[in-house]
Structure formats: structure tokens, C-alpha cells
Image (cartoon, rainbow, N blue to C red; front, side, top):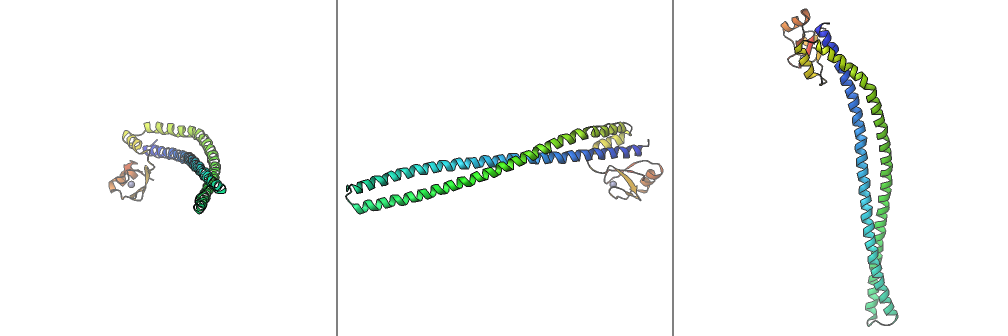
Length: 230
Ligand SMILES: [Zn+2]
């Protein structure tokens, strides 16, 4: 096999390998995306539960204050009923003040309960979302494993074929190939008229004649591709 045939064939194999890696990388990202979403939704649920707990605590404290004020009001009212107050009008306005305060606290308690309800609704929605994302994550993970199992032997076949071909490359090409194989750049380019088929750089006349007449591969100075005769 001629050096350039080996190079072209090796490059084709490398492209296949890059393609397989690309497919798997894309799929792994997809799985990772669902995993990240699961973490995110769980954090949101946790946050909502914390908010509910805080509001419950606030509500409990409010109810305690309400009970205390109610007691004071009842006591004052009882004294009034029993005719035990010195100043009836002051006592009456005090009762009114107590009742106003109670109405305010009741309003605040109601608001807190509404806020808790809203948070519970949010938690239910998040739970649905979590179930959906978890399901998708499971499906995508299974698909990834399937794809990996399916592509592994193909990958190995190309990899082994490539390694074998690399041993039959002249050492300077092998080194060059090793250095560049992980990049997705065109490594072997055909001569395009008088230019490099990859980057379009005009090649020196000497190089062209070497490529065409002597079938000697040429390293493009610009893109580092190995330029071979078409
Ligand atoms: Zn080039």
C-alpha cells in the first residue's frame, strides 16, 4: 500500500472514530442535562418546603398573639358587664382597639395560609416536573448504554485498524498523525489544482511536482494537512 493510501484510509477511520465520539458525547450531554434538571427541581422543592415551614411558624405565632389579645378583650368586656370599670368609655375604646388588632391579625393569618396554599400548589407542580425529568433521564441513560454497547465494537474495529495502519506509516507521518488525530481538522487533503485542498494555500511548484509526479505527500505549511495527489 502506498503511503498516501494508508494515510487516506487511516484518516477515514479517524473520521469514523470522531463521528462515534461525537454521537456519544452529544448523548452524554443530553443525559447530563436531565441530571442537572433533577438536581435543580429538587432544590426548588426543598426551598418551597422551607418557605411553607417558615409561614407555618409565622402563622402559629400570629395565632398565639391573637389568643392573648382575645383574652384581654374578654377580660375587659367582663369587667364592663360587671360594672367594675372606672371609666366606661375608655374601656369601650380599649375593647374596640383590641378587636381592630384582632381583625388585622386574622387578615394576616389568612394571607399566610393563602401563601402556604400557593406554595403547596407549586410543590405539586414541581413534583410532576421531577417525575417527568426523572423518567426522561432513565430513558436517555438506558439509550446511552445501548448506544455505547452498540458502538463499542465498531469503535474498537476502527481503532485497531487505525493502529495497524499507523505502524506501516513512515515515522514522520505517524508522529504527525498521532499529534493531530484527536482534532476534527482535515488531516489528509487532496491537491486542488495548485492549492492545498484543505485551506487553499498555494503550494510551491516544487511541492506540487513532488506530490503529483513522485506521489510524495506534502505537509501544508498553513493548515498542516498532508496534501496528496487527487
Ligand atoms: Zn493547507
